[in-house]
Length: 117
Image (cartoon, rainbow, N blue to C red; front, side, top):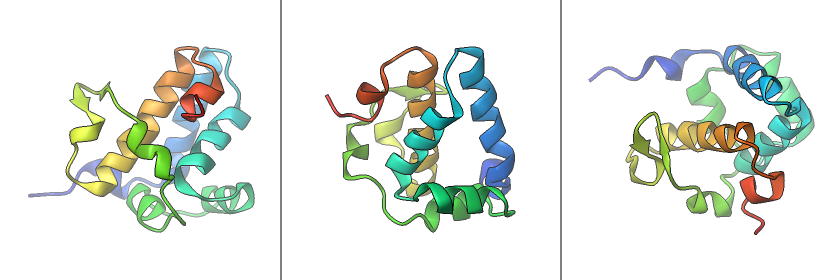
């Protein structure tokens, strides 16, 4: 079985798509960065450094410092698939981020998106 195309895409090419989606809904890049750092354990400086490289989406997630322990609270569907049922850990992490970005775009308060409530 071939691996999904998203795995080989540079994360730096995916990031602007998240920015555009959120900007259309009045959300900021700072909120996007906060969501990414919360989920992945990257700090802001390391995230910015990753965005200047050609690191693939797969490597971005497999090399992340630490998946947030609260990530298991991320549930629901993204692209018609329930994120909590995805068996491949890398794909699940990608979909976790997609779900968090969707929640931000839908207007959820940041503290709810970050599972602080």
